[in-house]
Image (cartoon, rainbow over all chains, first blue to last red; front, side, top):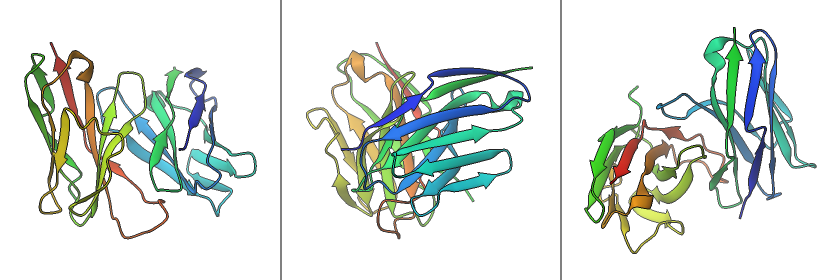
Amino acid sequence: GENVEQHPSTLSVQEGDSAVIKCTYSDSASNYFPWYKQELGKRPQLIIDIRSNVGEKKDQRIAVTLNKTAKHFSLHITETQPEDSAVYFCAAADSWGKLQFGAGTQVVVTP
Amino acid sequence: EAGVVQSPRYKIIEKKQPVAFWCNPISGHNTLYWYLQNLGQGPELLIRYENEEAVDDSQLPKDRFSAERLKGVDSTLKIQPAELGDSAVYLCASSLGKRTGGDETQYFGPGTRLLVL
């Protein structure tokens, strides 16, 4: 089955700086890579996703890049704000369509 | 549009007691998922339904866990008897279910936080 590794586990950034979270996956047949943001006690919310036929996708301050050859994908948040503080999860859908989540990254944006 | 609804939001029970969680997916979503989320970890799939059929329950501990989605809409997840290690957040998610290849967006409910004493 699919195995997703996520780094770093915690990330502290100053407001206005950029944050980068990296994930690797094992199943070369995986074709869908969503990113979820989860605030304390809240539901995971989809913030951006990318499919395997695309190398990069951007939505305002958030971007995701995918390198299928190397089997890794990354989340980039620019001009971070305090409300970006949360746990971020990457995930990959394996060849059976099952989502495998990474362990999460706790992002803390300090004013 | 209403999101995925779950109840109860919180549940405290003593070990060996039964417990049930309920989920109502987004209207029109054929696929429903139950996930387990332990503290500090990502969600782990327990079971996936396509309409009323359980198509992936390989991660469901069937000795104590059961689930049903009788009419292909609402779903119930049950634990009997509960153990201390079952304390976690139980998340329900849904997706349209009309695409193939696994690249469907999943929308999560708020979860049920279970504490087993």
